[in-house]
Length: 299
Image (cartoon, rainbow, N blue to C red; front, side, top):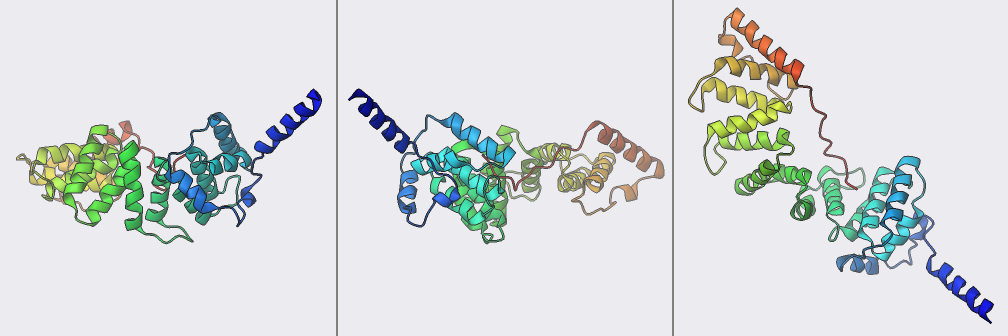
């Protein structure tokens, strides 16, 4: 009698631990509406995060099918859901499919800021089978920004506000990014340009020069060209043609500038040699930073 009872318990345990074997487990009769409703509610916090992470890492590094991820994702685990979307988009462990990635990110975007960010990137950049729609991307990027203050989400939003000439929202966002001190290549340039073009709430050329300098340190050619203009014309009250020449060389070296030689044209040959020499010394001491990969998704 006890043996029969034990066998029955084992059979029940096995049945309740059946896991999806592949993406094919998402059959047409699976109720995706119910799944979406599950993610709209409070997500389930799984006690198996180590299993989920291990399965994801195996798919990324060894291209193995993420069997257990589907099981936990369909139970409502928002972390597993984001991982499934990521793997579909990356084509790791699963056949690459941006449409399926989009659907999975949609399921858990409201409860997982990283999934929201990934969805925002997909809409902002577009895919072969997903049209680019920056306006549609903004609400998802805002979710990621509001919840985690992800700097990359903030920078994308700042560029969007600029395209809409929404100066106040752009400035507020750039000010928050300034406090975080991350990705000065972008916010430093945008903030400096806003001040110089009098789109900011106040006009402070010295602050503009400081923020542009931070962007120049990260090899932003547009910031270098704008800083050269500010220094050469003395927007902050002091004309500094020599350092305008130096930053002009930076703009030429970094790319992104117009390639003008405005400040060098009025200098003597010896001054130009000195200017280029100082620029060369700085360049030898300051390595070009790795580019920011705005197209990368988060996991």
